Image (cartoon, rainbow, N blue to C red; front, side, top):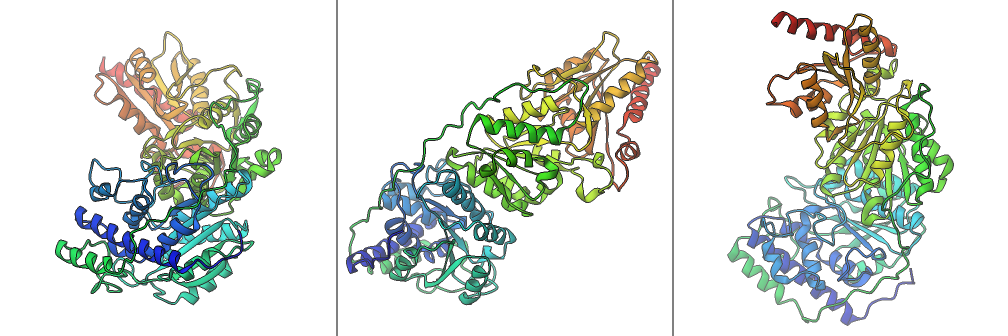
Length: 627
């Protein structure tokens, strides 16, 4: 960035006038809506004015241009001032601001990507900076472009641990194209923030995390211009001392005004007072970006060659994931991998070996890893695959939930699922992950049962919109599919079938192999079962399940290495509910497990071949008795 040139008095006055117009627009919009956060907007007015009309470079009529500077409003409740900025810039009609929070308006209570100028949904506090880090990492290392990333945080959200995961990430990777602005307006929702106006403590914290930290008067446009003009070889934190409700007489710096619009009479009086301070109605125009972001195509990514597995060979699906991802990396140079220091367990290290510049080590910070993936995937710049143990995604559920609201296209791989991991014990066992990901809107949940299916899942996920979750296992199991087998989302595989089948058994991953072993044992006793591999748990292939259940007298047994709640059994029950003559028996992990050998634990929890044999015999004898 060029050396700082102090703006002339005319520009400084225009920035002050712009800030006051943003205040007026935010107050008008929230009063018209009868809800919202005008005081949180008013503390940030000068920050937003200087950022959008002096510092940032972007094309107003093309908010998602790849070369534009990025802005993330982490304090999402201050959405009205973001909308006011885009009205001031001319992208939105001023009149639209009065439709804030209405069911037919795009201007929701918190920012969402239905708005062309919003890359990630915010409002669940503490998440914006992680996404901004992903954008900045992409700009610096993948796009190698000159765009910069700005993130505005409230001081209340600085109590969130995820903020400091992001601070550590940016400091470690020296993201000098990233600027975080702390709007230190002293007051939280129900109480003052813990540090109130002790801005020097924030400064020391930021410096300890490897950031260049500058304290400014957040209501001085001149100090802000100067702070934004400083460039260092590290990320910059601008710690702005502000007052909540600045410019609203009787409300400024007062408690109990968070999230409260001004009553109409009061709003009119305050608007008049603020309007009297405005000297010039002339609007400022932002500078244009340097158009140096490369053209990127991430559509229709195909594996360079088919799988090369042999039927009967033993492979852990977690390793097949690493092999597949490394292979996919050769198909498109925008495929990237992230991991949380488990790459030698999830096998994402195979990707790192072949594509070292496209691997991001996020260390043990799973919440931030998900946010980084979301940031990297914005504006279709990358195809991101993030991996860790399935169970550790549970701590990032809020980030995953917000990724869905952000309409993000990210791929998450959870390894070490279920009790089958063995001796490590319950803290390492993914037993809630299917439940969690099934609850995410527009998510696709893959549960491949062999190496071939895993490779296909990786390829399909790369081309699928929304959140994709791939569940992989630790034990090595035989390859059961030919390399040319075709896989599709929502299409189950009929793995075993005969005309004499009496029960349909549905298993996935390790339990599919247990079901096949059970079938072998039952065949010796002249009892035949049909075995289904669902491939995707969401969406589930209802048609195949029902057709085969009807062919086996309506009897279904599900068996899964997961807790009962929210897993395969409940997914199948939901699919067949209301269908006459169908019964479902569910085998699953019934309580908190313990350490032990994989086979011992499968037996202990009644999800091994012997348990399936027993369940099949019970189902058959029940109906024989009924006859």
